[in-house]
Length: 256
Image (tube, rainbow, N blue to C red; front, top):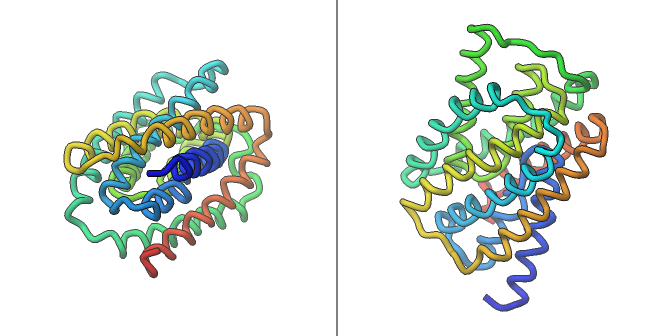
């Protein structure tokens, strides 16, 4: 790669991860297509993107841990439910055609953005709910399925975790995004990167620019998310969800 390519990777990685840190997901909307466009095949690009996305979680974690707003117990529950799904998803993606799944995921992601837009009160404040046994079982099962999607598909699954934490467990958007960035960005993506790395190649020489952009973008985006209100974050989430959904459908339909 030329120095210009590395610089382009750095800038686009910064922008995509800043947006992801604000919306609670969607970094792959920009980052993964750019990696593919610059010459990597899908499986190598996906593994490389997963490794780079860990830095988003690191940057966001550094900023959000200063606020001390997350529950270790609830965090452990999200990890316990989601990580096995990530491993299963990353294991099977090598052998499964992704087109139909991506189109379905795109439609569903667009629906999430529209649903949030039509519910002005959704995620405005935290109202703890579904923490009894039945609620935790259902909530955990969905987190496992989202983890599977996170391991097997490319974009938008962080948005699913964010909206699920808001809708099912009653978190406000700002707090839900904290959990998503730290647990999905750092631990889910780290597990997915390790699993994919065993089965596929990682373009290590591409990673310095990607990691730096992800780290700084994650930190700056997390800082903005903390300083802005829930209404602003909610709008960013909705726009990003619709954009990610459209992008997933477009990629599946055109291969571009």
